[in-house]
Length: 182
Image: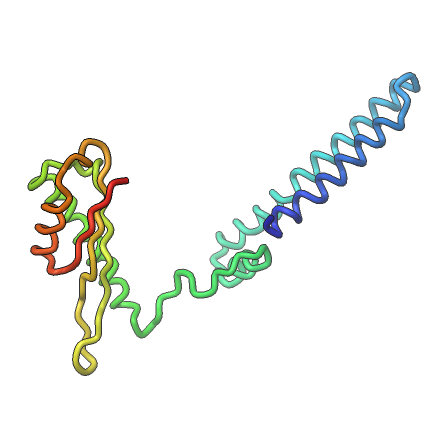
């Protein structure tokens, strides 16, 4: 179990067991006003224990809204979520990463269009994943490089010949192409 789940579950379990124990020990034929008050108090305790994790969540959302990513990362790490390096762009390669990402998206769109035009596969029946980045050439030059294209077919598209698709895409882009059914 995760630490966050345990941290929320243990107090709830403890308060619930205490409420059941108090209800069991208090005689039902006693004072009706006192029994109602006791039930109200135990119910409020259980409700407040349920709402406690929401308070921490709203603090996290407030931290994000204030624009403090380091505080948000610290909060997530305190709940056992290691996010070191997640979403961080190397300043030296920031532009290259951005171009590679948009270039890969553009190639994925082009492949999706070609799947529709050449093979009659509608965009809703294929998912295209492009692996692309900048590779270092001779010296300090780097070039945009498409490493591979993966296409996942669904619906009626699974009846298409995957070898023809792989061969055509590989020939057009000069990279490995894999077609799978999913």
